[in-house]
Length: 504
Image (cartoon, rainbow, N blue to C red; front, top):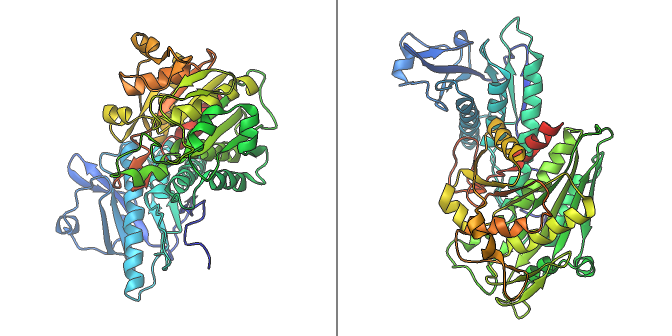
């Protein structure tokens, strides 16, 4: 019997630019809040409605407001609100449209009607590249679904054409759509990896899936190492965390080497936490919420997906992705509080809490990245601390950085792709807290948890320009908002691609 777990990558609607309207696809007319109230944009003539229809439908033009209305001639059309027309409004509107269209398609199929799987959005003449890219992101991701089922999957929107006004030729819009669609695919892949349940997703599965997705991609090499290689190389943190599970750890190395790079192009090393399930180990987590720990490898998923996107876009920058994969379990072979672990390169760590496992595996990978690749800069991304979720909530990622330029590049990249970051301090007053009397370092000292975790990781960066992205809050969502859907969000994947594109 075939697996009922969706196979990555999940399909996303194809978004393209078109120059002519087609009668086969339902039109989508855009509306927004004007100074005098609701203003309907290009294509109003495609609607078959009497005077006063907008008042009768109680339309306000708010971002994401959707209505199905009669189309001129026959069939149906959509009216979609853009709010004030900000970039965020366009992204929210795209997501709302595809969710509404999918719901309509499911209802049509249930009632014996043929569901529409294509839409044509009639763009106004003032639509710019930034807003069209945001709309593409919303359309591509707003309808994302990951459901493990033995039943039939509901119909979904397959394609959305963005129709230019007559006589308008805007090649920059086509480029914006293509770039945004590729970044959306990156987010979708990261969601797929993180949403996969952990009875399927062990370290070997995550590593082999990364290898499968990267197979045949020009310029991209994916290498998977097993527990024997990890032991020979001295990855004590990964082996300690993975030692309590019957499913041994893996180490994934993704190498993107474009055909042409400039002499001053930097080499970036991206490290992602790949904990495929986290019980907390002997310092076990409460039962409530533990089921969400299938997404504790969201940082690793973001790195894997980002390398795939960087390769697809053929960005002329050398990038290496490192993902230490382990399952933090409870057994007689699990590591203990009080143990001393020797990391790659020799630094020792006193374990004080086995639920602070993410920094243990990241430490090995960071040290390996420094020694093996001698990069120009380092970045790690992880669902690392509950403290960061308390500090920033569930829609903003925490950013720690030793380099001002890198910090600005990350926040700028996030802003361009719709992911928010807030810079946090590396407080000098807590630097000594990560020192240990028993070992070189103490894993989980008291104090501000997000800060001390970052200070611990900094010890393995050899003074290189480095940033740490804590996505414990925004990596998961309880409900849909904007382009985000419930479950794994794929947060950080688009930022990583956009960051690398900035160096190109």
